[in-house]
Each structure stands twice: as C-alpha cells, then as structure tokens.
Length: 555
Image 1 (cartoon, rainbow, N blue to C red):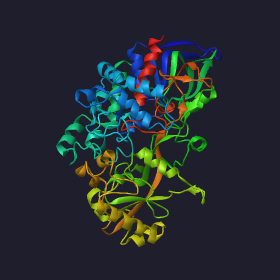
Image 2: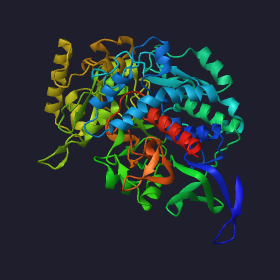
Image 3: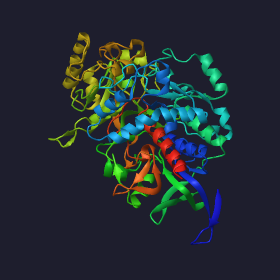
Image 4: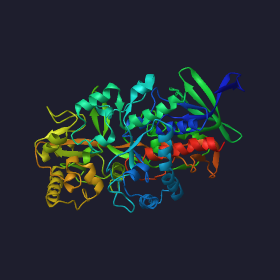
C-alpha cells in the first residue's frame, strides 16, 4: 500500500494493486487468490460485519467433475455436466461461460486447498436439483461443503462474521455441517449433545460460517484485514480505465486507487425496492439475504455504461414469517419443510399449484404466474397447510410442536373452519385435500408428480429417503394448521456481463479495463436455473478465483 498526493484537493489517497468490494465468498476468493499471486489487496465491506449472505447460507458449492467425487468413485464427466446445464438453459445460458465454469471448478478447489486453510468435503448423496435431466446426478457428487472450522483461530475476527437469522435460531445451528442437517442425512437423529459441546469449546462452525471463516483466515494469515463500514459509491475512471473507487466511511469520504483493478463482489439488489420493481420478473416480498445488498455494485457499473445480463432473475425461494428468540419476525425459508409428508401448498382458490417438493428456485417461479382474467398473481396469497401428524413429527420453524400453537400459525378443528379463518373457500380446500389424500393412498401425485424425482425423495422425510413416502403423506389428523407463504429470494442474479475471467463488459461487448465482477454482483452463468445445492456459491468462487488470477497473471 502506498500513498500519493490527491490531484484535486492535495490530500493523500491510498494506492494498492487490487481493490475488492464485498466480503462474501466471491470477494474473499478473489482477494485471497490475488494475494497468493503476490498482489497487494484491499477489501472493502459495506457492513459492520464480514461474510455477506455467504455466511448466512448452507455453504455448499456446486462443482461438477470435482476431485472429491473422483476420490469417492462417483461417476461424472465434463460432457455430463455440460449436457445437464444445457438441458436447463431455456436459452438463457451462454454455453461458452458454462464450459469455463465446468472446466475451472476442480482447479479452484485444488488451488484453495493447496494454498489456504480451505478444506472441502462431499455432501454425501446430495442429488442435483433436476437429477432426471440429461447429465443429472441422482446420487450426488457435485455438492461440496467446507469442513468444520474452529472460529477461535480468527482471533478478534471471531465475532466479526455475520450470522444468519435462520442459521442462528438455536445454539447448535452454526455448529453443524450441511451434511448433518435434515437435508444432509448423515446425522438423521441430530449431532449428539456431547459432540456439539466439544465443538463449542473452540467455536467450531459449519455451513456458510465454515466457508467464510476458512477464506477469511487465509486472508488474515497474509496480512489482509477487511475494512468494514466502507461503502463504495463511485468508480474512479481515467482514460476509459477503472483506477479506483470512492467510498463513504464513518469518518467521511475516502478515495482508493487500484493499479491492477477493482472487483465488484457487493452482492445483489434485492433490498432496493426501486431496482426490484425495475428489473425482476415477479414479486419479491421477503429477501432472505444481508440487508446491505442494495445494488451498490450495479449502480456503480451502470454509471459507466456496462452491459447487463440476467436482470429479471433471482435465486427464488419461499418463506413464512416466524418470530425468532428475540421476538423479532424473520423470514424463514421453508425449503425442506414444504417437501415433507402431511403438508401441501394451496393458493387463494384453495387449490394446489405446483410440486411442493420441487427445488426452491423452481418452486418460487410458481408465484409469478399471472391470471389473465383477474390480472393479478394466480398463486398469491399462498398457504402451507398441514395436520397434527406433521406437527408432532417435524414441528415448524422455531416451534417444535410442543405446548400451545403459536400465534403465527392458524389452527382449526376442521378443514372448513381453517379455510374460513384464512379467507379461502372451504369446499375448495376440502376437495383439494380429499384428492390429495386419495392420490397419496394410491402412492403417486398425477397432478404435479411430487415424490417421483430423486430430489423429492431426498428432501422429504430423511427417515424415508429413496421412496415416494418421503414426500407423500395424507392430511387426515385434526387439528389442521396453515401458515402464509411469501415469495422470497436468496439474492438477485443480474448484473454486469463478464468475460471468462470475470472482466466486466461494456455495452459494445468489450472488456472495461480494470473492472471485474463475481457472485451476485455479476450476471449469473446459470441464467434462470439452479443446478444443485451450491449453485450460487459454486460460480461465485469459480469466477472470484478467475478474477483474482487474471488480475495478477495478466499483469
């Protein structure tokens, strides 16, 4: 880091090789790669804690043809991976970028493991999200997780990584690996209390906490500490090249110069209502990401005339409103909850409208269907309906099913009364449940094919994995319950279009010298789709890695 006189005011301005904006997985990977390759690096984080939505997540990376799958003897190939991605394309995926992603994934994994504290593991058996598509993998092998990481190794940074509201809803939440959750199946009865106690001695954490913790440790080991409460607001451009950024801080505005380049890794724009209204293709009522994702990188890039892509898309999901342990209402993702037996989803007409066990990105798109007669959204409002049998076996959100029913759940002794209480037609709901129960008795769902896919049979009841019974179950035990479901998103997918090395493209399709983008701050390589668990973080780390490498090796 050097200082040079500032030409306009005479004040000193810092100068470094690389500036990375954002401290999620994409930003940390870019910064760490550039630093390993010998560059001086500055990381600016808008919030007062680091990690972004990556730290709130399950922490999986979807990486086809990865070395861990090869070690486990699982069959995968470049051809299968590309065929699978192409089968999901719907014309929105650039084949060349898909090839770069597939060809770089294993290299990124091996590079980080060889040069940083990163240690990856397979999430055993976790199938792709559309495993019956050409090239899909019903037996898994493409989803990786970071190994548990003891946060006491971070020193004073131990308490400076953001923890998600849902992940941190109980003391054990951050201490579990994704593979040990109900979705991972390796600990169907939960992690033993003695093991959880052992982990908490050194604050061992899993999922997104482990991913961010390991990447952060790699940076700290190399003398790079992120600068929190530094919100980048403008790119500094000279002679057509991005040479730095202006940022606001608690102490005022600062300018930093970058000799090699600036990386946008600021996350999406899901918390900015103006941008959401302008770009997204459907309603987004509940962002489940860090609130600092207000499109800062997007606005900075648009000001200098970049080309945008995938702007209408997000990583869609569904949520319910649940009070946390502090009494605050939080959006709770029902990614696994809606896939289990003894529950269905209905719209305002009292009818099912999708396969409730479909992957959450695909299911979220069902909220975007327009009724051409009423000219509003056909499937909003929506309700998750379940019976007492569901409650006794699974609970919901922070409620384990014991004691009185909490106020955020509607409960009634009959389906007709439940329908009246939530404002839908009682006969319609009774008819829907009767048809559902009859189909369950026959062992199949002819309406939406729920329970047929290996994905559905994995995400349902872990005790029944591999059968339709993991997802299909009757609603026949009073009292009956309902909770309102909202269209939500993990983050947006749109942003500047980039090259294979994450260089931002201008409106003419040429690279903008000195500007890079990765993660949700860039146009998604996956278009409207979600290939498997880790479909967000896999490309984030791959193109963060490619950005960091290009920034140094090209120089």
